[in-house]
Amino acid sequence: MKVILKADVERLGKVGDVVTVAPGYARNYLLARGMALEANASNLASIEGEKKRYAKVQAKARKDAEALAARLGQLSLTIRQAAGESDRLFGTVTTMDIAAALEKEGVSIDKRQISIDEPIKTLGIYTVPVRLNPEVTAELKVWVVRE
Image (cartoon, rainbow, N blue to C red):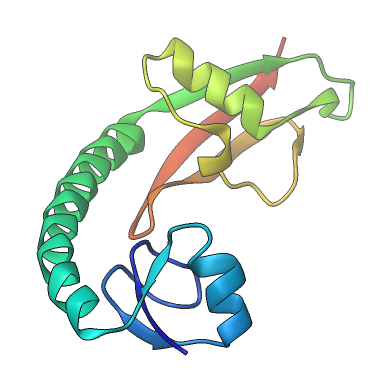
């Protein structure tokens, strides 16, 4: 079944793309959630205007994300944690801790945008990627020091 995407769907396409999917997936997931329209002549015509509007919104969002990425690149966070003699932390530094430290610096970032493979368990300097936009990722310097 051919559908026109109204929202970006990971591993499927972007807004305005005409894609072929299984009828059940289209009917039960994409159409039910308002993420797609059935591909017919009238829907194809109406989606063109929305596609242009979406491109403008995405361009502005990317520009804002790049400005924030530049600010995060200059920022260096210090997180104080209690640690033992071998520099192992008694707790861990998680994405929630990093997001809270960013909030104190005046930058509001959702913890799900911060991607660390596993919680930080030792003292040191870490470079943490922050995904601000699907196309923009910032590098944040995090110093974990003894309390």
